[in-house]
Image (tube, rainbow over all chains, first blue to last red; front, top):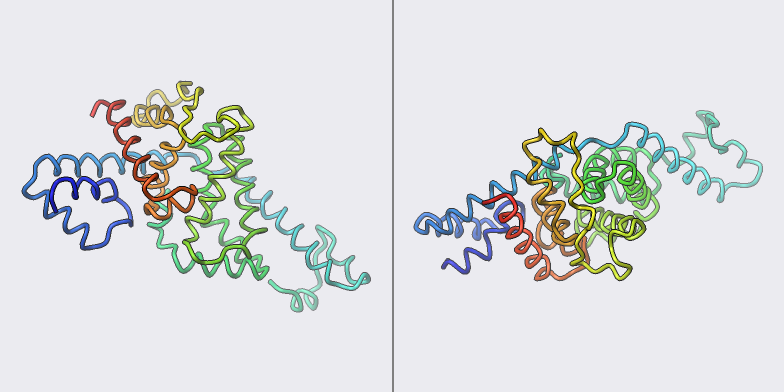
Length: 108
Length: 183
């Protein structure tokens, strides 16, 4: 690689974009080019910094899981109830615990 | 969070999405547990408002449940999920008046300089502040590529622009970050 070619690849050195051959080419070039080596080091440091920033972010509120899975459960019950005969729909009302024989018949 | 791709997601996530499309609720719970952290952190970094981030995260994850059948499997699950997050965050920014109605990708977020004193002692403050000052599209590119480990093609797919645009955005973002943190 020459310098312009290396400079085009270096921003993508962190992450999965480059092929093994491209990564090797970048490293090989930086052995003999101090300017591109400095750029590569700065890029890796910068990417690590951004990654650490993301890792330091808070996790979602614990209640969010219950909310999302609750909405999904309601959606699922409505979708299943829509294809059941009317007499069977009552058992799918939100919050109702389904009998085991029925759970075996329904998709997971 | 580790970059989502660094989790070794790949085929496992695609199988989960196929199972979700078939109505498998356990697969959806597993998907939530794998992805909620990353999606929330992306939304929080973009919106800088925990409540709005939780709302956007909820919308993204429910869109996965409701739209799993629409995942064609042509791109990666990471590109698909962050594509949904990209649109939900853009909607939230627009509602908050932090993006112009046309969604100008170069628009600078005028609230970006707002300082959170609770983070003053954090060694990452400079980088965080510099990131917050970037134009929205550049901030998103650098977050997806470096923060979440997406490839150039995945960032392009998620944000709906050509790879050349992603490269340009990352280039400008890096130059601005280097200026800001005094590299």
